[in-house]
Image (cartoon, rainbow, N blue to C red; front, side, top):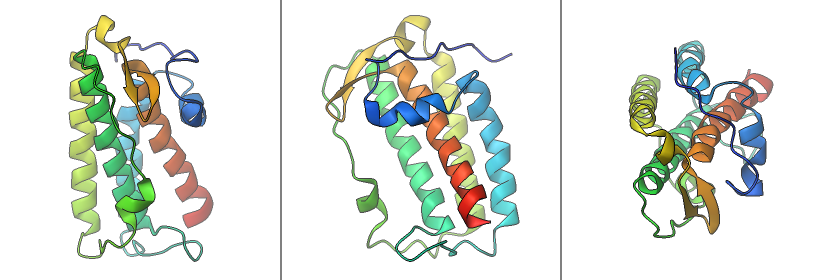
Length: 171
C-alpha cells in the first residue's frame, strides 16, 4: 500500500498550481503510479499520431509528452533540493521556451515512453525515501514558497491535466 501524503494547504504553493493540486482527490502516490499505465496505453494507441496537434499553434502529442517529462524533471529537482533543506531560491522556467524552436521528430514514441517511465519511477523512488519531516519542508521555487508535499501533488496533477487534455482534444 502506498504511503499517504496529506493534501498541501494554501500557502504551500503558488495560486497558479491550485488547479493541479485539486485534480488529485486521493493519494498522489497512487495517482503517480497509475499514470504510468495510462500514459503507456495512450502512447501505444497514438504512436502513429505523435505529430498531431488539435489546432494551429498548439503542441503536438510528441511535444506535449516531452513537456511532461521536462516538467517532471524540474519539479522533482525542486523537491529534492527543498527536501534537503536547500534554501536557495529556485528559478522558474518558461515551458514554451523548452518546446519552441526545438525539433523532437527524431525521438520515437518508444523513446518517449521509456524516458517517461524511467523518470516517473525515479520520481517515485525519490519520494518514497523522503521522511515525513522532509515532505513538509518549504523552499522558494518560481518566487513562491513551495513545500515538497505540494510539488508531489503538482507533479501528479500536472500529469493528470495532460491526460485529460489528450482525451478531450487529441483523440
